[in-house]
Length: 88
Length: 88
Image 1: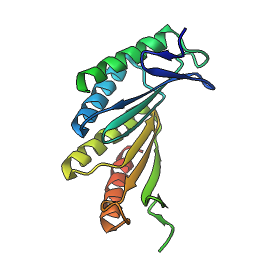
Image 2: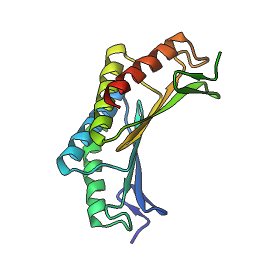
Image 3: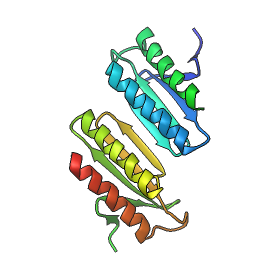
């Protein structure tokens, strides 16, 4: 297993996946956040934390079972990244 | 002048206004974020940083002139706080 997962940084204590997404303009940042909100609504799951400014969004995903990262968490991370690829 | 401005904490280097808003449920957090996004669109001004999880939103407002906080910044802070009062 590599340290990172498709651009996401694995962090410990508690286990999380972290990634920073950068955008050229606020409109793209906004579109990404809106798409992320729609995805969260759809699958009823939210990142643990979202930290954003006009041209960046930092996302932290916690473990779904609160104990260890699983394939389910990686799938969630992958779906979020796919949303960003539309806007970057 | 008091240290704080209507629930906002004044911070220095660089000068910012910071406030944490807490909500009982994600739906309220989401409603507040959506209202904030609409306000930002309307007045063409965004907080420097927004940091949120399912039941909280931390907001940092930078100085509009990048140098010192002004009445304009306090007005922006006041309008944001008014949005939260609808949802809290």
